[in-house]
Length: 174
Image (cartoon, helix red, strand yellow):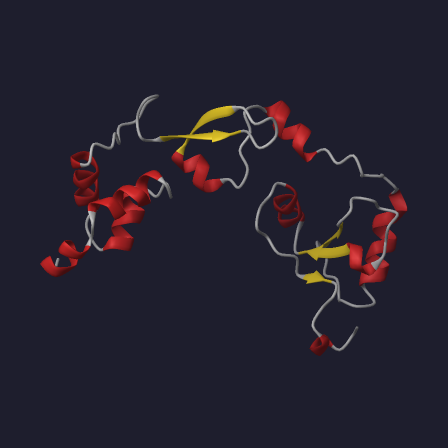
């Protein structure tokens, strides 16, 4: 590796990437252009504990997104999930929708309405934004590619729907 690149990497930047953004040593090495082992040595020289275990650098303190209780989770779990919960009870309580009104015909009517504006494929899921299956206004509807994408949306993921009103005017069917 070129010595000029190594000199341009500041140890405090490496520490921030590890402690604030919770990147792995491999991720930091890809960003900074130095080896994984070099990243580890810099972290150790700056006094950062990278060991595994309860008091090691592999855990992150976060608050439960439902009840606010502080919990310790692994850095990998922190990076992987948009929301974090202290227990299954908090997770299931967070996905309950008090505005949900089950109605068997709501999904069928929603698919009929959406099919006027968008060609639905088998497996596409029509989502009611307000959770009320009786509210089939097209501004309340969105289409997800699959049930997995739909559930990812409900769990706080960043999956975008494949159709949502209002669409751009060049779609021609508004």
